[in-house]
Structures are given as C-alpha cells and as structure tokens.
Image (cartoon, rainbow, N blue to C red):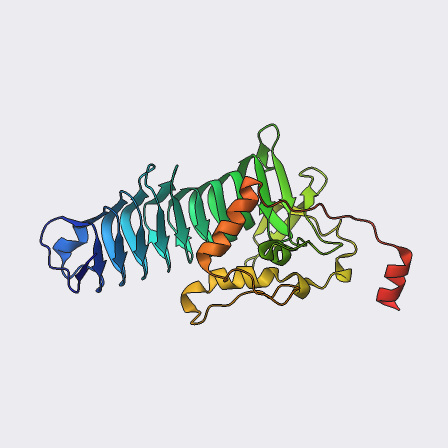
Length: 325
C-alpha cells in the first residue's frame, strides 16, 4: 500500500488503488466541487471525503473520516471483501450498496435522499425519503419520509408513512410506527428481541430463562396513535408494540442481558479508545466487542446460525408474589 500524504490531482476523477491516504479529500476551489472519487480496492483514507460521486469497485476499503457524496455514493454489487465507514455518511442524492459477495459496515448514521442496502450493517440510524434494506442490520432507527422496504432485516425501530416487508425481521426496541398499515408478502414475520439474551448468545452460552424473542402479530399488536406537535397538528400513526404482551418484563433485569454492551460498543466504536469484551460464566472472555465482531454476530442471527429462543409468557404466582411483596 502506497502512502499518500497530499492529494494533488487536477483531473475530474481521483482514482485510488493500494493507497493509504493520510489527508482529507476535500475541494479547495469551485472546480473541484465536480470531482469524482473512484476506489479500486485496498484503500484506506484517514481524512474526511467530499466528492460529486464516490464509486467503490471493490474492497477492502476503509474511510476513517466523515464522507459526503453530492450526487451518489455507490458500491458496486459485485464488490468483494469489506468496505467500512467509521463516521457519518451523507449524500444529497443516494447511498447504494447492494452487495452480493462483500459486506459494508457503517459505523455511524447515514443521511441521504435514497438509501439502498444489502448485506449492510449500520451502527447508527438511517434517514432518507426512501429506504430499502435487504439482509441488513440497523442498530438505530430507520426513518423514511416516504417509504421503507425491508426484507430480512434487524432494526432498532422504524417510522415511515408506508412500509413494505418480506422475510423474517427483528426489532431491537419495543415499538415501531407507520402511517399506513404494513404491507406484507406471504410468509413475512416480525420478531421483537428487546428481551432476548443477546449477550449470552454473543458469548456462545445458554440464554437465561424467561428471555427470548416475541413474535409480533401485526394485526393484534397494532394500535392507532395520535401525535400532536406544538402547533396542534395531529398525526395519526399505527403503533406496533409488544408492551401489552410483556406483562412480566419487570421480572427480568435488562442489565443482566448485556444487550446494551453490544449496541453501545457498536455505536461508539470510533470513540472508544480501548477494546472491551464480555465475561463468560467460567471467567474467560468473549470475542472482543469490535464493530466487525458485533456485525458478524447480527448477520448470523439473520442467517439463522444463531437461534434465539421464544419467550415464554408464563410466570408462576409465587414469582409474582416475591417480586411485588
């Protein structure tokens, strides 16, 4: 990998291959606002990046600073290996990474007019007019001003006027919202994993009793909710929540599940100076809580190689009495 400490290229396209770029790639005059960036593999850029279009042919590639593409950030479908963005990614146009072989890891939020992800992992939230997720993980929220399309995804939560869903999907937080009822393909399933023992699964240990996933009944678990803002404007939403069925959730100490360590370690990856791990029951340590390891864990949930047990909704009277005495 050839080290580059300064970018001095007058052409309209900057091509990088086998390069370590120590500086930012930012325009210094109006002419450079129209400059494109093409990454052809084995590239590490340590500074922030601005370009009209950013095209990534293949990985490995790492962007250590914030990235902005005026028109489009596009990772080619057949890109191999891993493309990683440690900080925020934005575009006034689109962010597209519909990867077939490789994987893209976003360490912070994505904000664009249109976002399309396949085999993508986002440690933050995604904000767009239209969002499309396939076999992807978003630990924060999916906030679409027009439409959200999901197919086999893990999401923290979502809020969109229109939602179209297929496959098996998981929610990390208790509630999600849509203006219109969710449109579903036959066989579509939603599970809430707020009370799943993700910490134990990450360590490869048995899940604690009384934990697990809850199947979301889109019809029965949907409620009409009216939101009123400071101008008295009313918004009618469908609220999808399992709170009404988790009657005994107070019996579970959520801190013992250690789920928050996975989410926080991923979302704060670029700011954590030390690598942490979880302690197993035998005193040994789990895999490090790094962004790639956490991403791999959630992708194994999507693939079905990590199975989450179903949450039992039963509790004995003696347990309730001991809890509330």
